[in-house]
Length: 151
Image 1 (spheres, rainbow, N blue to C red):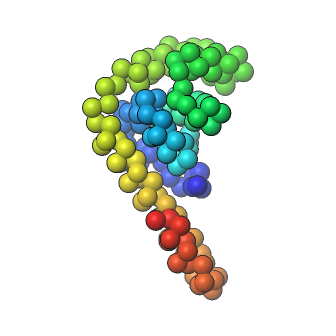
Image 2: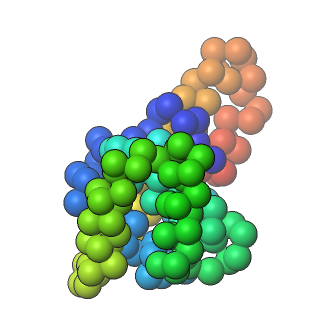
């Protein structure tokens, strides 16, 4: 949905909030669906958060369900075996997963609202950029459609 290089959750949310996004994805299949469609791994502040996002999104794409602890452990094991994740980082992943699982999500509505707001704003930025390029090229006919699509 986005050009991968233009948008970053790190500019909007700190790592704790990003972990909250992952916790909500872990617990809420409807939010998982929305986040999977509208966010990308490289939007996250670091490779660990991005790995969890990718694992959850991939699992959801294949099963249409939230990922289980067992499936996450298996994906981590495969990632270590394939040298995507260094064995020395397993403890970091375990601690991050504990935080994701332990989050009470008392602010789940706030997290969801802020992510939706981020996505809408990012889509509008993209529409403005594309509209400007179309304007520069003299391609005026499709400009309003870009904003309709973004909104």
